[in-house]
Length: 541
Image 1 (cartoon, rainbow, N blue to C red):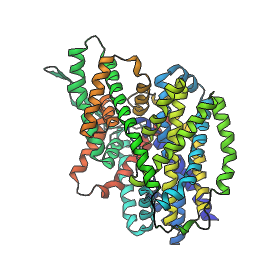
Image 2: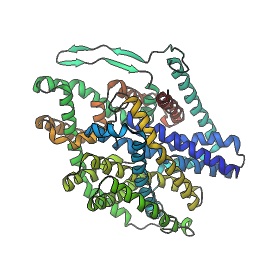
Image 3: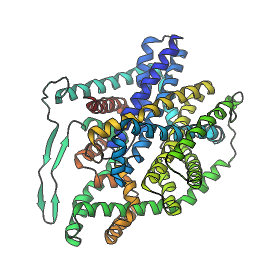
Image 4: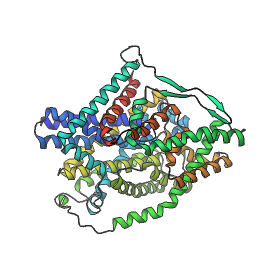
């Protein structure tokens, strides 16, 4: 009983931690790293001290991680789409923000409705994806390997602690904590602004208050994020600004950049839609294949079971409240549910193979057609994208946990209970976390740039921009496709303040200085956790 209580407390705290930290990361950076491996290392430290029995310790860590990690993907999904309304209809968004409890209620309702829908879809897809297709769901496999090799992971856990403590000391020396004056400046200047021919070199500064977190995220992601961000930042200096000055002097710099990026995003979306039929065909072919997989693990427990059927009752009530409160028509609601079902299966299929959840791509696939089919308003556009991202993200994280449960031979019913506990906990607090962050830092600021939400707003408003600048951006997007560069990350480099993108870029390229990047990931996880936590705590001062 004591171990159950400890596991419950740990899962609750993990849910708060992952939801709060990833809420900030989702608004401040263009990517959202998986939080489960970090929780596993923390869980190893906690339960290795208080639980001697190896099997009981492993179960406690598994359940805590499976329940606590759901909040991370939930926060990333909301942070990617919910702020879109601010960039489409700032007055309405600010009216919601003026009423903290109402704002939190609306976000919690959206999170619970879409999250529970994704949870049930994960139950439905589980047997097909995990056992018939035998997809590896790499994050679940990674956490299992970390927990089972507990002796080897103590060293990694200590590396995480060293990164965490070192970053806390670094933040303490910057000042502002406990009323102590700092000795490390928050910002240092690297290059002063100057003009070289037609190129205006901007002032380049490095923000040391957030640099550890950004560097750690960049390091974990590697050159995959560093190269496109660097391309975007350089393109802003040597391409966009000269084009603006030479060809469109009548268009102000900010309008030119936004229109250019809108053309880039439109081309990226068109290319994505063009590849959708082939992509769905490949998924269908994989789903219809034959596999000789032993899935006796489910012979005792599996069906679209009573557990899932019971959840349909609160889900139906939540859906009625959600669709009624936000004035969805029956056809709009049906379109959203069908679209979310199809895209959730696609997202979980991809994530099961490569470990990445492509939330934004599929949210766009559902949102854009609705603009033409229903002529929807900004609130509906935001909610459709948010619903799809939450549903697909939650289902993906749930299936990562189910892979971990299968490898550890844990009861499916017990696993579902812990995951549901984590999901409900995160849904209940996520609105308050977002309200605190937005109220303190301000959306669209350098601290909360909300890049992915801005990108979606630009795509919706594309008809309001200069056509010729849009065409230039579209041509640039086509070039990026040919060069196989991620257009969303290039977009981040184009519009993100250089003081922020520089940390991600330096972190990504610093992986070239080490032989084994994975061996440094526990240290980077500690740095990431500590710096994002100290930045989040600034809200509470």
